[in-house]
Length: 302
Image 1 (cartoon, rainbow, N blue to C red):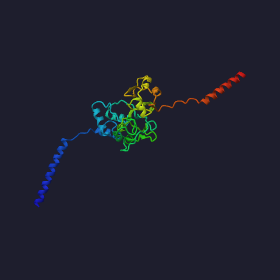
Image 2 (tube, rainbow, N blue to C red):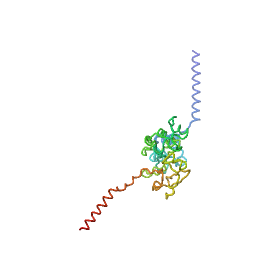
Image 3 (cartoon, rainbow, N blue to C red):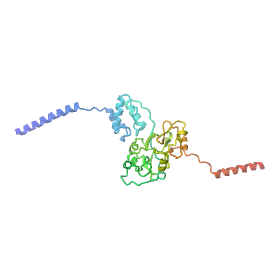
Image 4 (spheres, rainbow, N blue to C red):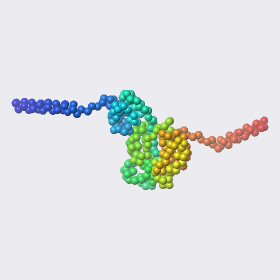
């Protein structure tokens, strides 16, 4: 009996000492978390896409709170939540933010199956990353889309799909949140986040090839050949030619589309513009002319 009592007392004493040690350690090594971080995290969309540059929404929330303590949250933005979410967060933190322009992912490759023929067959792992690591891919262009859809797999918002006819990815402007996941997934960096533009209208060079003109055209009929005609036609200095490929600065572009008409290979794309008015048919012109002549004859006879 005394043995059992001694054992109980010893175990009780050990438990009490351990509890005291753990309590002291919890107080000494306690990590304080600002309660605003949890509040901001609840306001964020919870996509954890990493488009903001932080590891998930909780990381973004911590950066916002610490930024507010430092007096500024400028440059911090949740691409998924957009201006509405950022405005609510700013109100909670007592900060002001500048409204940034909406962006959208743009595929800068116009090398469709018809314009960029296959020159070889790849039989390895069917991902863009794996295909790119082996070399040129299945065409003679070492810069264009590989067509395996890594960008589609990376998108959490069902905003990008492969077109089976062109072999190129297409972005749904209404679903795209500009999180940048597709751009990060593309090993050839043909996807760019650009300003969405007024009425979602954009003008951009749909090519990233740095090959010289003859080589680029041999690989793809829609390649930019770096001729500079687009830059000469632009009155706003929005176009530069570097490394045999042109680039349109979205901050300077005024959407005049003169460059689109000047490009000899049609490598510059204008998106969401109204279709040009069709010229009257020749038959209609002839009929109108005949009607006018008939009217004049009747007036002369009268």
